[in-house]
Length: 185
Image (cartoon, rainbow, N blue to C red; front, side, top):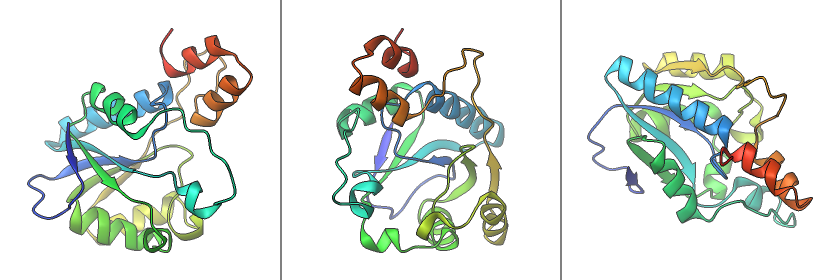
């Protein structure tokens, strides 16, 4: 997996999904597998757009967020999924203030050469997370980017796969549940 921290001279067109990917749990794994398939269909490279620091640490500085993985662990887990690249950003005040349109058009389309954006079923981004999937589709169309939404991952277990659920399981000392959520069972 190639890690891009400087978005100058990006050599390929990409299919991407955006997220922090803490723990790279089974829901993330499902999304990344779908990303790879969709990229392959379109002749694109697959990549994630992620952040060095968790956005909540900037937005709510008094909130103590216990991360599942360090940055290096997260990058190793992302690489193990077989994706081609990672665009690694620092979540700054400047990034926080970008609207979804600005993020899609300026960061994703112009800098990262994104041609396909896959949005997780419950993912929202942009200033105040006030815009939604239909907005993302419209902004993508304005710059030649296809935007599709990932369905909910349901393996029939009744489990909700999220980093927050993994954290709660670990806080309760339920290591078995955390392992199942992370796909380590």
